[in-house]
Image (cartoon, rainbow, N blue to C red; front, side):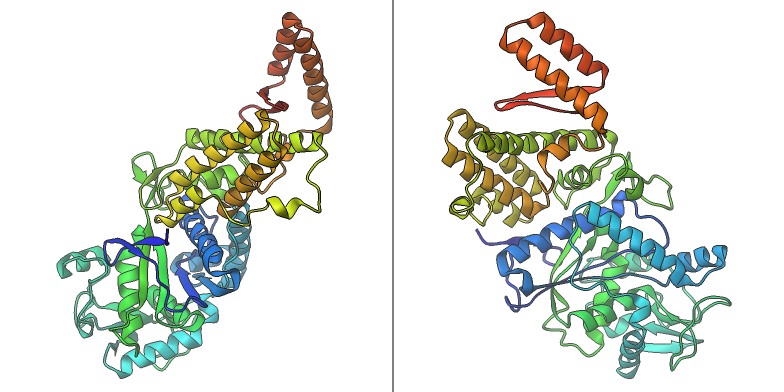
Length: 479
């Protein structure tokens, strides 16, 4: 089937048809870098990383251009820098490096472009100038504001009445505004804050204009896909589209062909938020659980639905990955006992494409729950092939499993390392010795000895998982 995506603007799933298949463009709103990212911040990163991977698979790696911006000038950044007595780039460079490392641990590929607001300042000022020139913006008391009345379709994306948009924008209705919904493009900097020159006086940009300028500079308009969290739908994306189109672009062509939004990540009954304080930091979670387990947890529900984050979700995700890693481990052991995969014939068994049912799930608006179900079916096929003692079928089903899981960012580790990550060599040798004794006891039907050895392993906090090619083990409660 062809790729279909849910378009927020149309409020329906639509077949994806890029403007140019040789240059597919996607933009996703990125982080404001002043602190560690929480796992809610990571959900859009992982969701749109899946889309990035799917697009690259369909159109080719060189044909997909993905930009994810960085907001590196902001009130919270200024406050943090002032508290530490350092320039803002000391703060932003520190937390951007941590952010990128954390997202890589979650399996996110680096975007093609990662533009930063402070490095796009000339383009921001130039875009504001165009808006002022064509009467879509106006200067007032050191500020420049977008004139929402100059854009007839204002509210088209979020579909909110003007009164609701004014209330939802949560901005002061300053006396110099021509209309209460008008929003800031440029504002004076406060004492001690970063400042840039502009035709309207020294200051710094508003939040919304940054993305419009970075999209125009990095990708050009119109773009194929614009993504982000559902919390950005209004006012950020509504404002971004309005100012972006009014800066001299053809309104009939549009700003983005497809608008995509992921649902909230909730901690209990509330959206995860630093301001509320109900956050789980990625930097801390990756010290407690494998990155792939956290990635699986973020994708276990459909991206458009809310997802509740808790420890049980992580534990279930780890066990789900144990299942497919176990199948891969069984296949590797089986093939090793049959001479391995001959180098000369390995490509004969490589499909170079995921399984059809798996791919169909992803092409249906990134239906990751259905894709996970397909991965479980593939792992079952691997084990069935092992039971049939068919080397050809094991080779084929193993490669299907790998190709499918790798497309989603899974099965990137060696199975042995997956199950025994973080185990010191002394414990490893002791456990391997006990398992070997247990195998001998079971072979001789000495069930009492086998049970005694299992009790010893349990006392070491080791979980033993018996499979068709032998026993696999890992430390229990690793997550």
